[in-house]
Image (cartoon, rainbow, N blue to C red; front, side):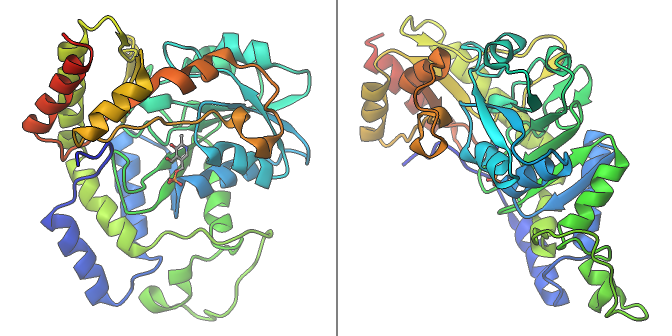
Length: 369
Ligand SMILES: Cc1ncc(COP(=O)(O)O)c(C=O)c1O
């Protein structure tokens, strides 16, 4: 089966993990600090903290805005559940917003349609890695959280996605452009926000775990201040060690993702029943996380490909269509349309030339080209 998402780890990651295990310090420690330094340098991010998942980073980001309980936060409907869950868990209310059909991102226009007087913040998702139009979104004048889970390596007007709004998050789960197994990141241009994030990720404790014992034991290691209540979302040295090796390879991984993207565009552009994903403008770069087409007879196409051993998927089932959020009655036509015709084709660094040829030939075959 050709999988739709995937990562590529090699002997370097295996050795790095083995080295951490031999060091007997597998939890939070110096590898995390090393990864954070490298990540900041690579993407020119002034303040950054690694946490244990992108979903937790989203929750942390909403908490860091200190919004009063019950505050309304605009969230795209066409996104992963963690976006709405983070808002709810932080005591706020998601207000679902439609996306633009071509970019699959929220835009000034779709935000205006969802706008209410008391909107306290906006959560933006750079869907598939295509940067949203951040300048116009920032003009609404409320804090902006950027979900850059797909957008590691995407830039907007020369800046890394994730540091254009007030707080940004990344995901490094097993299928993302840069994987640490499971992990996430949080970034901001404001150093106080990330300094606080680093306390919160360790139950609100000011000292980090490895300062208390083990790697660099200090005097009175048993003492610490707890600044505010929070849960634990510490990353591990094991995850960070994988991330360090992935960071060294990220440029070549990205080049291959771009080649796959261009191959699909070249082979599929003549098919009238398919709309290809939007390319970035001159002021943006794409991370090529997923190649999401819009296809006539989408479900039949997906089944046809599955029968040929090619797995495809839809990311994501619109959130407002989920009973849990109690907003099933609202009409978000573009998200609903994408729910019926969007399809992510396989895009990851383990795909071979043979896989790619098989995928595109099968699609051509389905539409009888
Ligand atoms: C848009 C978006 N936000 C957040 C997340 C959550 O990231 P994680 O899987 O690291 O928790 C994902 C994961 O797929 C995602 O796609």
